Amino acid sequence: MQRAGRRAQSAKSAKIDCFSSMPHAPCAMPTNAIDFRLYLITDRQVTKLPLPQAVRLALEGGVRAIQLREKDLPIRELLALAGDLRVVTKEYGAKLFINDRVDVAVAVDADGVHLGTQSMPCSAVRKIIGRNRMIGVSTHSLDEAKNAEAEGADFITFGPVYSTPSKAIFGPPVGLDELKKAKEEVNIPVFGLGGIKSGNLGAVLQANVDGVAVISAILAAPDIQGAAEEIIGYIGR
Image (cartoon, rainbow, N blue to C red; front, top):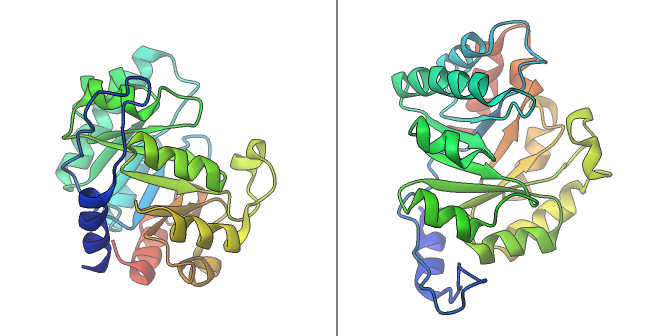
């Protein structure tokens, strides 16, 4: 309730021009609320199972938001995989986000897209996907977090909080203090990302984040469903 209240207050008070490249365009506020706390990002290289099977096990464990992030796949393979994940996520009432590929998100009727700082601006993506789909943005500094909010993101991931091979290209870990600052300085939901697992979840949640985003903590686990259940049991869906 507190999070929803902050979001409603922000929607009323924020005077943000989403379309910063077109100063006179109105800012259309998105209609979807972020109703999940665990955000699973895919990496088919870390799981021993076919990705749709691994995702199904995570959904069985309570995950309700999936980001398809398989940047190396040719477009037709990515589209087919996205279609498979759309089917299984709908079975469980879960949300599906597509990393970067706005066209794929629209083609499979995904719930949203997840952008990097070098992707199309949120304002441009919003014009394509409309108000009924969500936009997440990966951020790695306070400035990037603030920019994502100003451009119209619905939520951000912030990290890497801890050292992790999958996020090494973004530099050293930002740490818990920076994560807490990001949560304090933006008015959209913030998900901690990078090296997060069951052993450090408590410390991450003390930063008052809205949730966590994970990859290997679930997909690389010997028991994917059990790993998802453990994290869900700690933070809620």
